[in-house]
Length: 111
Image (cartoon, rainbow, N blue to C red; front, side, top):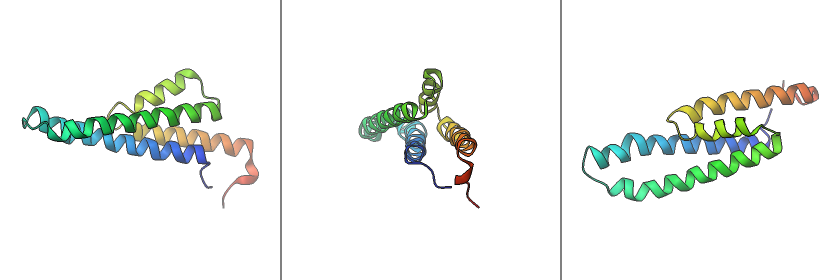
């Protein structure tokens, strides 16, 4: 089954946000504070902030389309701020949403 557009956008945003956060936490910040070289974090931190804001907008869009509770939306947004969590939560959310789609429209099953 091909992912609906909103879920595909969420998946992409979650992966890009997760990778971006790992670059910030594992490369840019150690260089800044352990290597006394703030250049990368000075350039990359605003980029990461923009990536995160896109992630938040995508989660809000998916929330509106899928009828998620505010609590679920907030938890999904927070997952984008914890290293590795966006990857784990993305897998869980996509699996839940695909299962819900299968229950609603079994004629769209693949295979």
